[in-house]
Image (cartoon, rainbow over all chains, first blue to last red; front, side, top):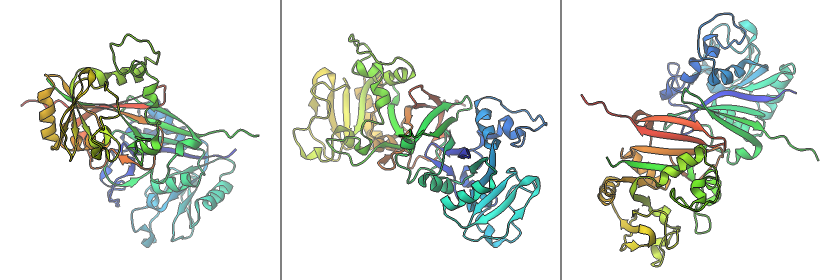
Length: 223
Length: 223
């Protein structure tokens, strides 16, 4: 069964998944790289997010890696928000093709939610960016149809994740909490009161100092 | 050296240390007892918060207990906010003597910060409530003088904790994060951007599902 999953979404202690202001030079605003240092230290990252990669760039292979590499396993499509695809104003730049160069790390159809759709962009390595103006449910139906039976990743940013959680469309979420207080940025948790009612939640702290939280949708008993 | 410490301060994933509205019937508002179930299950709690207690009420003796019982060890005074001492409006009730009955669990001088000071109340078991209108620094000086060389506990609620953290008066904080999303209430983290700069932070998740975070003030190297 194709599931909808979120992986490696990282928040500060005060629940911000990005700082501010976001720009081409600082995609995460004043947070800089502090939210993701845990991931940069993993083998997942040094191999470029490719679990089958032959290169050996080192990197940790403990709990941080074990969680991180799930980002790349089992997905047939991604949905991301406009703020993940580019810095503020990318919609006005007809040449903008995302942050990731000619061969983006998605390798699947990738659906960008935007109020300014444009024609699809076929990239190297299997990634094609499609631009959609759609509700979360409709975007998910479109991505699901393109995923070839595999899972659909909700790739962020936090506003999109929140919208999909609020619409009760997420089967599994892996969240990483970093012990910093950002103070400002985009909050993940707003509008998600009682989210725990729908999920089994586990927490495990890592030697790196972060805490991994997993939210797995509770099985609904058939009656 | 007498230190200023915070223990067993519990927050939701979204950083609320109490729900709303707070009342005599629901001191933590819509949070109910959900923030503190981890603590009720410990031996610390079944012994009434007295680590030398002879009664045996059972309770867990793992990491939750190990952290919880530190609340009672080494303190000579407590400072609390008006919202911890009683429900909204207690200032208008001349007979209100706190939530805790004739023998409160503090057993030391206990300073209640309020804009409506009243004469001290001597209770059983060593607790005397003093009512102060003072800045955090002045309140701490007063409590320190009364603590007989032992530590001073900042007992909460979250507004008071935040004020003492913002004033850079806290040497150690033990925080417990419970995997629930409260959505509303009183936030701990507001105004504390970059708090991590002053502290060594550890996180450890517990089998009960909560994560314990400790903030220990960094040693300042003498030059």
